[in-house]
Image (tube, rainbow, N blue to C red; front, side, top):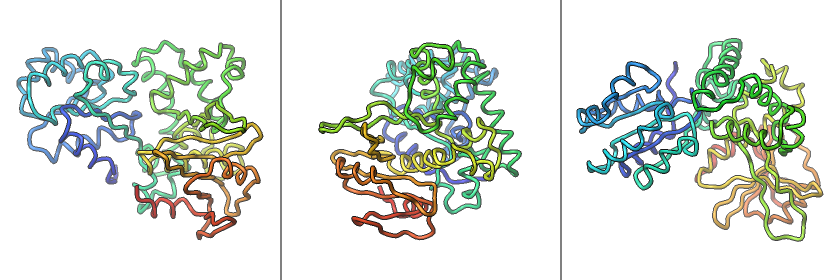
Length: 384
């Protein structure tokens, strides 16, 4: 597997210097273990355990003996969601010892799912969310051209062929449903969640209607929201909330749902080539997803929303930090057509910055000084 420097590595180092425990959380196969092992190689005294490995799990049968034996080392525990009861032991050990950088724990579920971590290690732990490869990390590599169609997971985007990448993603989906979800304690039949996930792929980037989805699946809206929760907390989907404030306009307040990785979207819809994708109704929504994930990664301190009124005046992405508002409209076209509703939405929202991202070769201004830019241009010029 090719080595690509992960931008988050420096943040891991910084957090370990100022916290006893650092949790690196993200979807399975996004590169957490690889990054951790590379980091551990740069340190003198470290130990790594994979809690999915029976031999490694046996090593901590007497957890205090293990901790005391390695008391001067940085202990890395991978796939921590397999042994959530260990958090209370980590807390006791951290409280009896001194210093930061004692534990690096890796997990494939959010801290809300690993409830013991947030409850037990409060004040002792710092969380970092890690995704697969970002646009920025691949920008100067030969694999950027494959990034959109194959998605961001390392083994998919770096595969030797489109066929190998597509097969990997199909296997990833099956393994996630049949093994990972049950291992987290969810008792949802894999076939049911598989149908739901496929349905979300067809509804990519659209406003969630839980009642309508429930009717299609033959389940309640409450059950649909539970499925959404499972996929969200395992980093598979993003729920993008609507931005609303005091205004005379009637605003949409529901959330939009995006499957976060475009490669997974394409695999769920059986779109194994760019030619098949270009003729599919999901193409524009998939590109929108790709850009939104890139921008959220670029602006990690900002909160992300979409904006829409009941009349259809809409902005695809609004990033908020304090009083600052940045608006982005996204078009999967080299000749973007900007609807009247976008300009009306700008008049209502009054953002500090505005940008239209399209598949253009060169940036250019349009009315009111708004720039049309390529995604590459935005990534290269953004300094946050």
